[in-house]
Image 1 (spheres, rainbow, N blue to C red):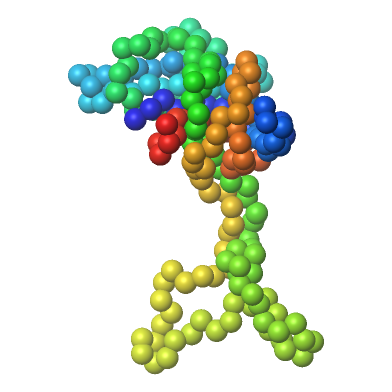
Image 2: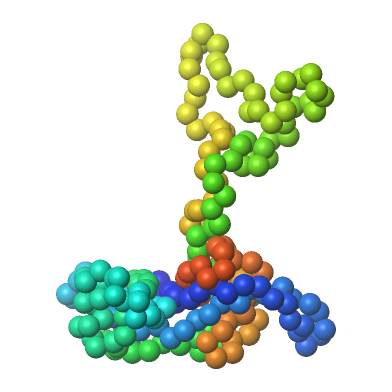
Length: 211
């Protein structure tokens, strides 16, 4: 149960550490998050903090839904694009309207990053499931197919859950145990790749499996 920070993936880069080793990093823009709501166990049944991230432009605010904007108007804060609620043990250290910046990750060594992977559309079994395909000869007639999926008279059907051609990507994924390379202002550098495309929304939280 830890606080989840809202950020935005900006791309990838590479830096050198103190030993001269090259480190491939993902650049995450972590603008200050606003505490929009605080829930307490005595009134709501559990403790949690709702954060708002990625401030809206004027054009985005003009197209936003009134219930979404109303949450920020209530606390007299600038509206944000994304809301994320995190269950935490102690909520007494937070206040409505408080700004939380990327400095909370300065002392962390590892983080978990969650995002939506790139959508690749409808794909066949070779790309989606790594099938090897059939013979490449001109007369084989079987190149990139899945092959036979039929059954015998018993059970007389195909079992569900088999590997078929289907939609690929666009799934919510979490990459765990990414090392925090640097925190500079509103920018966080983490070692390795994180899900999603450039300008995609990501959620950063302390690593569950590593301190």
